[in-house]
Image (tube, rainbow, N blue to C red; front, side):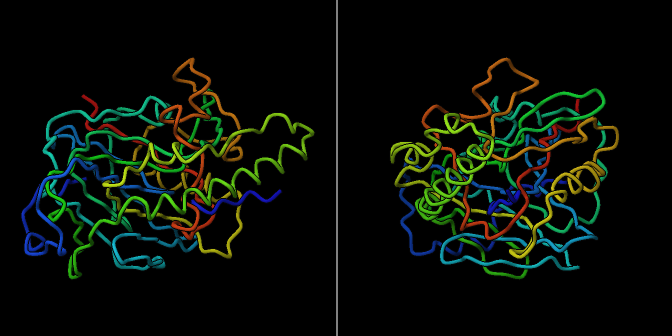
Length: 330
C-alpha cells in the first residue's frame, strides 16, 4: 500500500496598515464568528513568550526536493512552487479580539510535539507566517503514529495546526504579503466541503490497509455525520489555509521523516524529538505525554471527524507537521 497523503523569530507586531482601506464589501458589524488559520504539512510553530505569545510559523527550504505552497482564501486557490525568494505573510490583528499576553489554549492532543526550548536558530526560511497570539491551537484530522528516538517513546503526530481567533470586525480581517493585495478570509464551508470528501477517501484507504492485515473489524466510523463537520465550521466562521508538501507526482515515503529530522529540527539545536519510525496516518497511536489512548483517534472533540483537507492542500507526502516550541523556555 502506498504511503501517500493528499494533505498533506521575530513576530511582526500588530499593525494597522493599508488593509484597513479594504473592507472587501463586507459589513463592519460585529458578528460572533471565529477565524481559523489552518497550517497543513511541514510547518513548525514558535510561540514567543517575550512577544505576548505571538506566533511565527515557518517551513525551511529543502535542498533535496521541491515543495509546493498551497493557499486558500476568498477567491484564491493557488499552488506556488518553492523558490529562492523568501515569502512572508502577516495576519493582521485588526478585526480580531486582542489576546496579547495570554498563553493560548493548546489542545492536549498535541502534547507530544509541544515543548519548551531555549534555543532557536532562525535562518532565511522559505515561508514564514507571523500571527498575533491565538486564543487556541488545535488540529483536525487523524494523527500519525510515531516513535521518537533516544530514548525511544511513542507519540502522535498531527497533520496540521489550527490557530483560532475571535472575530470582532469581519471587514478588517486579512493577511498581508509584501507587494501583493491583502488576502481576504474564505468562508469555512469552503474547506469543510473538501474535508468531507477527504474523510471519505481516507476511510477507504484505512479500510483497505486493515483488510490487507486481516483486521477488517478495526476500521469503523472514521467519517461521522454532518454534525461532526459543523463542530469545526459554523456558518459564520472564516478561514485561511496554507499547505506545504511535495508536488502531486511525488511519492517518497521517507521524505517526511527526513525533512523533520534534518531541516526542521536544525532550527532548534538540542531539541530531542528526532523521529526514528513513522506509521500510517489514521492508524491508532499512543501519546507518550498522556494516558488517554483515545486522543490519537478523536483529536479535538468527540464530535470532530477524522479527515483531511485533501483537495484544498493539493500536495502529497507531508503527513507530519513540525513541533510547537515555546520560546524562550523560561
